[in-house]
Length: 185
Ligand SMILES: Cc1cc2nc3c(=O)[nH]c(=O)nc-3n(C[C@H](O)[C@H](O)[C@H](O)COP(=O)(O)O)c2cc1C
Image (cartoon, rainbow, N blue to C red; front, top):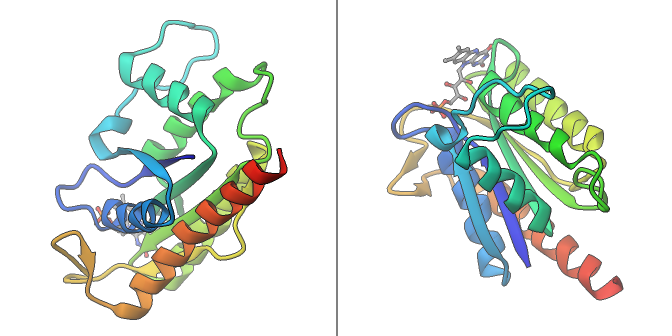
């Protein structure tokens, strides 16, 4: 069972990436293998449907998504919505439009948004879920809208137990849904 994480920012010590990694760690605790494409790994050429050449990282991202049993998406709220970095990476899923499993069809997708305020956090979470639907995935029941603040993440952990629980719930729901899907196949 493979869960693929995509998200974070280019900032050293990104809280969005820390949030993503906590959700993935919980998916691992539930028995999943995980792979994470975060921050600098998402620096890809703007997706061009007319150009089939793919940078090695883009090819690795697409290969991971093709093998995925579940996905966790994490984006910062930039000016009220998901960041260009994360959206451009997700646009590469267009390469899966003609796969036998189209895009992320049927996969559980956990969504995590971070922002300084509730408006951008909740709007970004809603947008991530809309993208998940656009890719034919199933956003999990719980999505985390995290208000990022200095000191919230340290040493790979979250200093607020309630937010830590929320992030872990996202990872657990993705792993549990992936397990149920595998059993039903
Ligand atoms: C270009 C830019 C735009 C941002 N716009 C918003 C915004 O509209 N609302 C908000 O609450 N936070 C905004 N933020 C704050 C980010 O959401 C916050 O930095 C992010 O969630 C955590 O970033 P990190 O992963 O780099 O730590 C913005 C930050 C940047 C750099």
